[in-house]
Image (cartoon, rainbow, N blue to C red):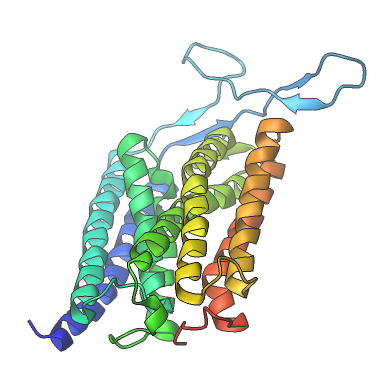
Length: 318
């Protein structure tokens, strides 16, 4: 198969991915809209030992099913809503396979790692976000996030096609390095996990007390925290690998290029979130806002810097 045909196949597979993710979103949305609903029990609060000690929230109670005035009311999901969610999972995996095939075809068409410009990077980022969600769903039922992750991936791919598209071709000499497979792959993987955490954080802020088809806020916060704990060391490695690549490409490890600065700002923001949880016991809304600020820094670093600030990383081709 010729390089031109492979590039065309890749483009068509990206468009197919958009449609599949949108179809999966509908399935997840139907399950969420008509599925199980429960009341979120307000978190109890305890006072630290000592006069005037600050109040801290206790861990969310675990319900055993025994009758209790405090137990949440649960409205069970109809069977068809559960089937819709299952179809959403299936379509999500098909879309995942289509995006993976698009990335592979793009790489074969240009005979290099397929994330040498912003279009390719955003496609890889959407793929990583879907991978993180589907992989998490294999270990724990997080289908409640499906509609939001799928629409995020579909919008991301649509934005890449409409505004970031770059025809398949060679890249600037600085990107012709094995470091692109190391540095960019780590950044993409971490960004996918951070995206799952960001979606969970937004759902936490949306979910109020009382009846809701979203999980309890404690569960939403737990999903976000676990995703960030996994992603943070990978992002740390990506920043270090980027410095090593910069030394090989430009003869210095760090030069305060806008991309480098915002990668560091993103690292500091997520480090602050993790540090606040461990040392200050931050939980709930405050911690969620901090991690969403960190996610905003990540998005600006990944997309905004290349478009608006330029620098040595101005090979965005947009």
